[in-house]
Image (tube, rainbow, N blue to C red; front, side):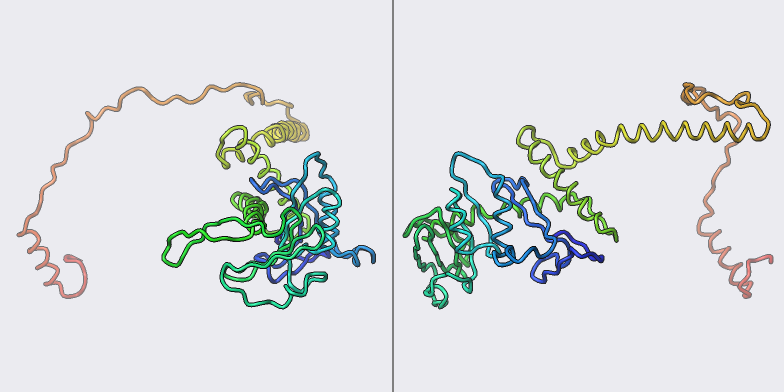
Length: 332
């Protein structure tokens, strides 16, 4: 979600998100470093055929259309997009997928919809053609679909106990792979929010422009870290200076030329010469100021001795103030 609270037709309200109002963006990023490959801004409902197909299916299909590889690919997404028809469609395109799914979705096995009370670290696996349904309980029951795993494929993961120690537990390999791969967009959002250019505005396109700018900076940073280890703030300053140097130099030249024309026109209207005597040229080079090197003499200063009054002087002054009794200084 790109935050925006103004008035525009594309603005969405999603109460379950940290940013509740703004532009809804679906994106594809690298799971290892968060590099943003492609994104799509939700602009509203489409035709009837697209609505019957489902928003999640349509978004995923549109985002992966540009994926071309001779080796199999793995796509991971959350329960907003996951459905059984989508998993079958991706598998037919030689694309493996893993995604959590809501137990109320269509075509899900009825045994998983009953919400069985599992014991901790207990799991259930079912298979239908090329899709495997997995349920596993850690702190709560997690349900997902996968086309890149087989039945009864298990692995060991580390879990932190209440006393802080680590313990190895057995869980389905599909859940371990999902946990490891599902974090690309979180990494991207973290990098984008660290040095964001987004500011409050009533113009509908300002927030989207800032999103594009921040996304470009994040991708540049990820590539620079891969090739040369450089701090994020130094990279942003370098890019900003190189992008604005030519524009600022051109603006300064135009400002100087316009100021010169304005002064010349003003003097000609007054009937004076176009260039008054003593007025330096705009292209003249001036010598910088130099500090004085002559030492300062203290010979003419008179030394005034400083004497402490002591306890007697202090008591005498307090007596004079006490004797006045009028709240005024003595002698007034």
